[in-house]
Length: 243
Image (tube, rainbow, N blue to C red):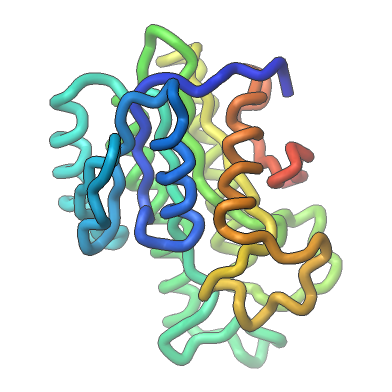
């Protein structure tokens, strides 16, 4: 990672009604270098100072394309943060054994954690500024690392996040040719006090962060990214996560 480069320009946050996404939107809106924060959610989140809401559905590509057309009409963007994700819910829990594998759970995990961010990349990577450093970042998880998997379990979630890492790497390679000043990365926010992590917080290695703490860590990582970091995954403390 390189020297700190303060964030400037226009930002887009997908998942701005979630715990981390909302905190990221607030943190960006408070940043003096940020002109506007487009805040996206299934149901439009609150507006506010420098916050402009829009609606989208992660599993509905036309809604993502419409958001890109709406935001792109105002000009290039400097930061796109995808703060969406699923781990459990609707009677789904992380698998403890292969005996718990189900097609429906794998389909849901991949739709939310991999395909959705890929479709956002399809429509928003072309909007990244070519005049100055710009960043596309998607929230991932350390358990998406194949090399770091020593405990097993959580197969559909792990696999979907590993797929997200491959999507990020692939997009970064193409982005380097099309927009050399742009970066594409995955970010691990740590264990955050949210509905997603609530059942699993006891096992948190580095403790549990508030959404605001996690957002500040992630913004710090974004400010310190160098061009050579594109295509990689980083934890909340700036440590590189092996794919």
